[in-house]
Image (cartoon, rainbow over all chains, first blue to last red; front, side, top):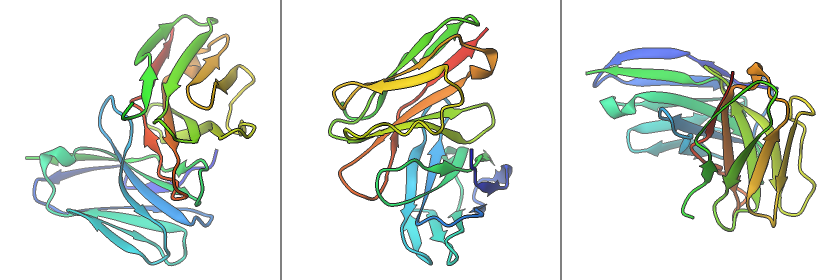
Length: 111
Length: 114
């Protein structure tokens, strides 16, 4: 099935550093979502974006919906140990329809 | 319940056996989705139910996979004659109430086919 191109695949960073990850698609979406998955758990929604160019923050997290509607990025500022996990981007459409997911970015934070 | 509930959390089965995975969505959510997550991969859409409409089965990998949703609530994903490549985490999500397509996930069922 269709998947998004998410990069990087993994990151090792020092506590306190900022992190950036992004997602691109060959097709347009009108909603982008970012989820985080901890081991043994399901993905948990971090940020949802609905408008091209939109920049949205949730605490230390900031995400943007690309102008072309084909990409999105997520930034995490001043990382802390509990930021460890796998971050997934997902593209979709308004209404209750299936999402298309990236393969995830595995984040490791070194204290 | 407060969130999406899936059972069992882990299932080990022998190749060739049938398995049933259960999902209890958030109360009142009209849409229910099944995704599969293979090791190191993203989530792959399998099937979804929206209200009383016929389910969208376009993501099912083979005719060994089927799902039903009874009474617009609980759903069961059935895999017949399991194969080793069916080993994965099966995640269920639900959404509803708005058009914003915010999907809430259960913790998943980890299926291991020996």
